[in-house]
Amino acid sequence: MSSPTPRHLLKFVTRRLRLRKYLHQPGDGRPQPQIPASLLLWALLVAQILRQYSFHAIEALVRSAARKNLSLSESFSEDTLGYFTERLDPGATRQALLSILRRAKRNKAFENCWRIGLAIDGTGAGWRRHSRCALCRPRRNAQKGILGYQHCLVLLSLVGTGLSLPVDVEPYGPNALFPSDSCSG
Image (tube, rainbow, N blue to C red; front, top):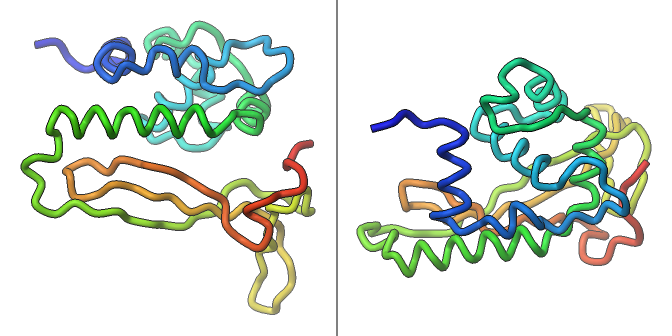
């Protein structure tokens, strides 16, 4: 049996999970991309597995000697990741997640699970000194002074299967349903 490697993971994701189309067309909204969306998305996925969650850590990873072993063909900056993720259409990711859940159910992955449920958890993402969009919510200190702004998100996951499977993520707050503009710049 061969050991797990990023190349084996890529084969598993594209062949077994049938996510080849999603990896090549993840809903990239950049008008003139210079770095392929598939490379940026793969870097984000590999970084999640390696528990490197910040864009700065991902930049260090793709600029290191490990880049070729991670199936990443070129390096890029954390600004590139930020620009890519800001313009990424969530619809394509939602469809990919739903197809994985449907395939898992069809393949009876949940058959021996006697307690399956949905878990909802909230978190914050991004950090700015000034509000840039309708989704930016203030973060306050004990004296009620504003420290900065961030987006508040809620994640829905399928749990009780031995593996937590994300289903969807949505912003929440007063302007979450109909934001007036995106947070760019």
